[in-house]
Amino acid sequence: MKIKYLSLSCIVLLMMWLSACSSSPDNQKEALQRQVDSLKQQLAQTYRPGLGEFMTGIQVHHAKIWFAGKNQNWDLANFEVGEIKETLEDVKKYCTDRPEIKSLPIIYPALDSISNAIKAKSLKRFEMNFVFLTNSCNNCHQNTHHQFNVIKIPDTPPATNQEYSVKP
Image (tube, rainbow, N blue to C red):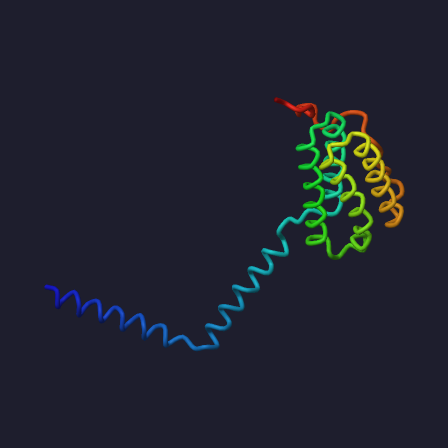
């Protein structure tokens, strides 16, 4: 019985090997190229956020930094600065065709300054550097011909379902 199954297995393997050998390299190459072309087409149709979506996200994080810092919730403020930095990295990755990304370095000194104020847990330095951050956003908008998009210190939280004060 074992010999019969062994023989049958050998025949099946031999048939698989022969069928694999029967397809020409050109046919295999064409099949692979069709797969590559299909994947490229799918990738081209995949959604990628635009610069505006990224900037709207940054605007929300900007406001959250303000309310977290004003409430001296330094952990939340620090987290939101990190979110802006992460979003800027995504902008550089996904918006390479946009000339505006050349102006992104304008924002980094302000982000570093506000990060230092947050680490120092200094409300006075925080407020001063938040103005620097806000002005840097506006300077970038001026530089990229988006001067109509003016950012300001927020007066209402962007999310009313989030606590900004420190919880014990």
